[in-house]
Image (cartoon, rainbow, N blue to C red; front, side):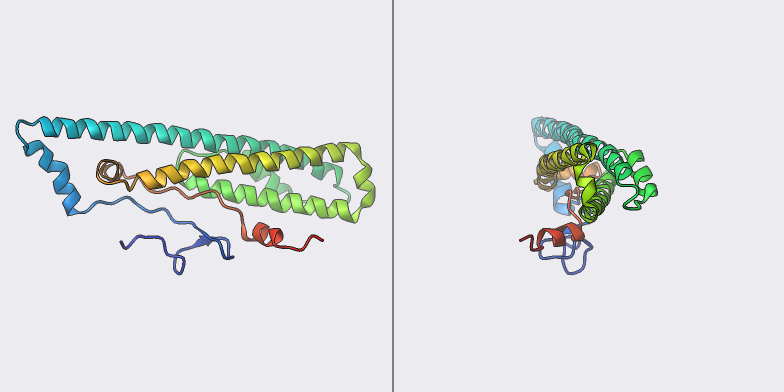
Length: 222
């Protein structure tokens, strides 16, 4: 297929050995599938066409329900991201004299809400990447100013931030599992793929970390 994922040519999220390709594949069907879709109605005494129509209705309902689950899983990530924005804003306020953080970034993050289209997947990953960068900046500031470590309010905020990081990781794993189900089933021939193609469905892009976060994970800590 001409639209298959290709690590050599397609844009990837990250630059290391493991890549998530940021590309949505449209679901398409060939002439054979189109003939297969129509020929059922010519089978006497039309019972085949009725059965096929029922199968397609069930497939459409299945995709609609799966879309709702995708939105639910995505909203969980959005909720944790929004909470983390507030926590990091509190941290930034406490270390304001030690580090100059980008207030515009916080404004953008606070205004972010997950959309109903696949394009929101990439936006969500970008927001998470910005939060990771801000969190690292705050950690550097705390390390450079040891007296900040004794600040109980900052310590509590950093602990909440650590908790939210774990929750975001768990939530995006659930989300990616649902994305995997969607991406698999839109190409499940014949019923689901034909229905997906007729409704203009595409694959979804999994939630991925940025290249800087991957590089930090490979660093020597001891």
